[in-house]
Amino acid sequence: MLINLFNPELVILGGSLSTTGDIIRLPIKSAINKYSLSLVNNDTQLVLSRLGKKRA
Image 1 (cartoon, rainbow, N blue to C red):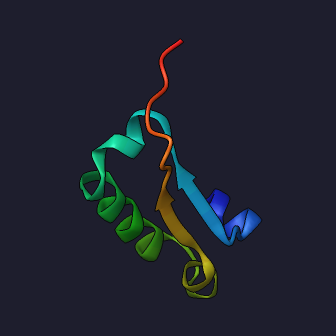
Image 2: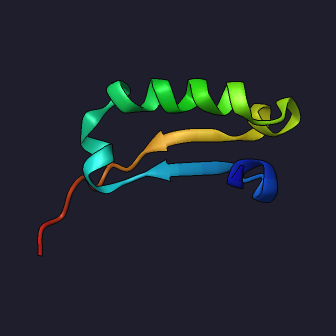
Image 3: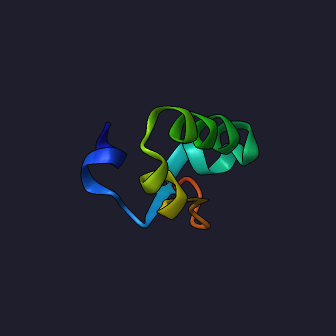
């Protein structure tokens, strides 16, 4: 719903999600394609953060 509302060009998955790689990225991309408007999901890129998980 937020992708339809804000129409972002880029969604960055960070923290613990970034360490999972394609295990999490592919299902999220599939859900974006299924549940968002076609005009929106064609413009939105889904990438993983290169910083990984940082512990305090």
